[in-house]
Image (cartoon, rainbow, N blue to C red; front, side, top):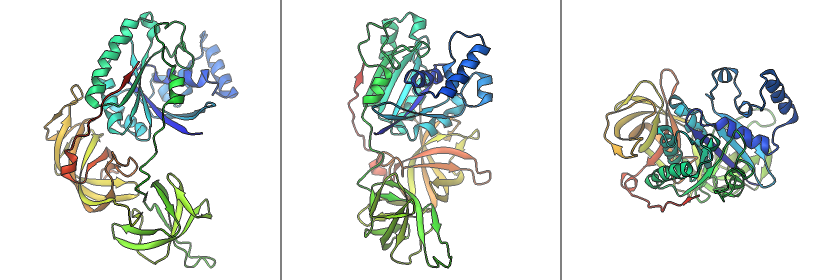
Length: 431
């Protein structure tokens, strides 16, 4: 049974937590003890309905404010598929949380309040989800009950969002009218929306294709830990632990260790302390190599036929997350999984306008700005362009003094000529 990872995003009070709660509740994915707790809270507040948002709002402070601040994860299963849900906060100041949640998602549910229509956060979250490699979108027009289930309202929002889809060249967008509060078109099709003949939200989630996790033709493995027990039983053992980020590794593969470029052969692959003949992404493994070569935390081991970029300069798209603006010349750290290197931002090339999605010149990046920059690192990094491999094309920028996360970054290009190429995509919008 495959797994679909999806994120719900949108503005504040669009009903994301209620929608997830409805999905869990109506698909019988809530345990009996949790149901009993919800019933107690309903009785204590003399409410006629269970507060479904409580199924995702995990922190007391959040519930007291009536908003969801952190990223919440929920899991449920139907007979057709397993699901991992990420509920991202709607406040603009928590855009960083949305970026974190979307980085591993296969599909984005963009919620729009039927009374508000498409607003800035709708555009911002759609842009970020698109940049983060999400290809499947659901435009979930919520709270249709508050506008009398009016088809004209639905069609107007669809038309407005279609402009965004065309601008961003979104390949697959499905629009679904619903009311999360009353369960219309969430799990079961609604009797109140007779003019809509498409699937319910859950029906669509169960049938949408799940993309491959990574590029299978370019194996990648970055060392997270070097294991050297140096015990009497294992005096000379040396293993390299980490997660296979893409592709397949087999015993006997001739590999190269980057950035040093040293060559050797895989002697042993261990999964859960058992020797195996091969392993595939995203398995966690320990590799043992035939030769005593110098391998450190953050190094990348790939077959000699693979072609990662080993660079000290690259272009990247950043979502800036710090109150202090970014300007050219800023020194910081690039953390690419286990690899951490000193770097500087040599140039801020452009900023994306949230209203028009057009690029404009700028000399700084402010909080939540999306900018394209050129980075120079003190030591080589082994990366891929994000469009080719999401696992190895993402990184974060970290403040050298405080250790605070400054930005989420996506490798846009290691070759400036390639960076300027356009890849046309015909948008497909379904209702």
